[in-house]
Amino acid sequence: MPDTNEVELVPVSRLVLYGSASRIISDLLQRKKAVLSPAAHKVSQDFISSGNSKAIHKQSRMKMRSKLPLKLAKYSIEAVGAGSAGCVLANRLSEDLVSRVLIVEAGGSEEENARRIWPRGKVHGGTSFISHLHYIRGSRHDFDGWAKEGCQGWSYKDVLPYFIKSEDIQISDLSSLSYHGRGGPLVVSSGVATSLSHKVYRRGFCYGRETVSKGDRWSTAIAFLRPAMNRPNLHVSIDSYVTKILIENKKAAGISFIKDNVKHVVKANKEVIISGGAVNSPQLLMLSGIGPKKHLSALKIPVEADLPVGNNLEDHTMLFLLFRDNSSSGSSPSMWSHLQYQLFRSGPFAKTHLEADAFFGNDKIEPPYFQGTFYSVPAVSSFAHEFPKMENLNPKVIYACTYTYPPCNSLPYPSDEYWICRLRHYMNTLYHPTSTCRMGDNNDDTAVVDPQLKVKGISNLRVVDASVMRHVTSGNTNAPTIMIAEKAADMIRGLDSVKDIRKKTEHL
Image (cartoon, rainbow, N blue to C red):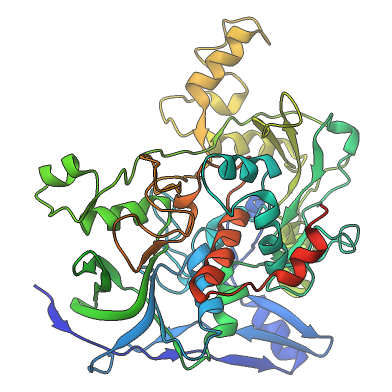
């Protein structure tokens, strides 16, 4: 059994300035190959941003002490998970220097780039580090629907200011619009990488947007966590596996976690916040006795609150389609493309190549039911044949990359029967799980948290991540998860940080 200690955690962060041009080029050329674009099949492990024309800043790996000072530690707020939501909470909650904030993350630095069978973002920045960086807020009808189902304060009018607060829009055509923010920590840039014609898209069309800054992945760790790491009241513990929420008399009092095979117990004065995501948050709640009574009793876990934790899982599914567009010129990466990215963070590898989206629905008062995302594949025959292999998750289906789809080949194309067959045999998850700790009013038997994101029946405990969504949004889920954390930070601190923004958006 691990030893038990109570500890104080100390953060370390550093910024290194490179002033020599030759040193910069040497450093860049020695890095591993590309990069941000999925077409390169890898993710850059370096985070470079231009401070000005004369200098390049390299943010070093966030290091934590391997041997922690052993003494009693007590924090105002403890957040479990430094993912898309947790990094936002770390920044916003530590703005109050009176509060001592502890962030506990099971993964390590985002530069370690760990792999998981189910992508859960076990790393600083969470899924904002491993995702496709597509920035989509969702439909206004998504959030208005939440409010109609009992989630007071979560209508589109309520949440729009928090999207704007985070944003630093770097798309010239959008920068003057009241819908977008300027100067926020989260860079949102254009996803257009080729001259793909807008005529390809029929309706509900919008060009792609991505959380990319000067060719680099702009995760919430980069946008929110790193800028706050020098604050004396913010401590982060990595490679720390939280095993239980400490509950005393129906009140969350702290957490226990294992780090370096030592069990640590840390108490919280104000709140414990769970930000483990739609898979890990319900798991931790159930391990702590919060969940379906029948299920917990069968596992001999003492029941603290009988709630539908883990139910109501919602996700997006995906069907990969390949078509040719002769009206535009696709990108054809070359050796120069690699060098262009390594030296200047530009070129085809500086984009995700998620060019655009089209949304389809029945009317103007309901959320769209279908999203088409257009991903530009280089017009090279060998690559075009290899690309579908990445989408074929069934090793028994060996012909998926040759544009034939057994057992659907015998059906007339493009009949309804053919497409039903394709959907049945070739549909994949898009890894957008939500709603496993869904919010609702106090009379809602399907809800785990109330509109303040407080866990029902347990005081001083909240869940803040994609698991609280009433329903999955009509688009990629990272942007709304960041919004949820921004709004939750105001709830926790008792602030209205967006009142000035709200004055500008009331008419939208």
